[in-house]
Amino acid sequence: MDRPRTLALLLAFDEAACVGQTVREVKAALPDADVLVVDDGSADGTAQEALAAGALVARHPINLGVSAAESTGLAYAARRGYGAVVRMDGDGQHDPAFAGALLDAVREGADLAVGTRFGEVRSFESTALRRVGNGFLSAVVSALCRQKLTDPTSGFRAFSPRGAAFFAGVQPHDYPEPESLLMAHRQGFRIREVPVRMRPRTTGRSSLTAGRSAYYMVKTSLALTLELLRAR
Amino acid sequence: MSRSSWIVVAAAVAFAAVILFSARSRRTHERHILGWLGVCAAIAALAIWRHGIDVLASAMGIYYPPSALFFLCCAALLVMVYRLSIGLAQEREKVRKLAQEIALLNVSRPEPKDGA
View (cartoon, rainbow over the protein chains, first blue to last red):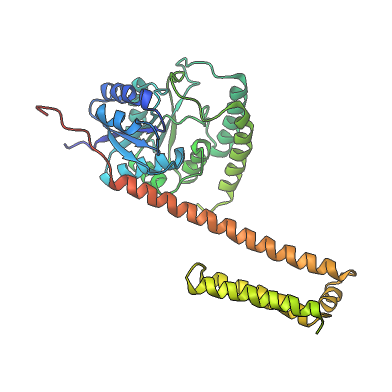
């Protein structure tokens, strides 16, 4: 193959019920891409389901969190010389029909393309509390990055080889999304937002309950402040 | 030396012995052993030199000498706990890297389909 290959990276933790379906959808939407599922130490049959659906599977022997799962997948892409990586959730919340648009943004020169729910494409409505939280984070991250970023918590993203190599090595803790935007900005990466559709989850549970949201806001604000104080 | 001094000195010596035994069986690291032996030495020194804490307190400008002792103990504990939390974060980072490397070394591939 002449053209550098594309990697579709799915992160899954205890998603046996839906990961197979997600892999099949992604393979249908991106027939030329390799699909890698990073199984973050699931106790159910997530890895087997993903493998049966035709994905490559990297299994964490223990649960390490979203951020580590993402960096494992990006390290795989960086070491194997993939031309672009699109990251999605294994539970099918990220509509694979929009993965191509994110990859196009990377091919047009972005190092990090972020799928936003608040573009011209209608997504499902999340709770009012989350919308307020997202608005706050969006305002903070946009100001710090000097660029309008409407959906800083979106995990539906595509990376250039440069972006993948950077985030394979350095990563924020726990929930990485807003902080990684600021890190990308400070690296001088080109960030682009692409309108995508996100669907309500069909199975499993959100890792962010209402009670944790407030804690998440405080922690993320602290993480953003600390990132500003770090050497690049 | 009073009886209480003897008791405290004996306790310090016993603690030092425990530390050295655990070091012999490699259950503690040398750099931690030195710190702990230092703690034993400080306890024994204060037991033998009974007015040491009064001298320390007046040097620190503290009127009530036991307060100086509390302050020094708290400060030492704070430093030790802080060092432990740093060490824990470092270990966590190493475990994460190891687990990721294991995942990358064992990537499973789907069975090739017939005719593929």
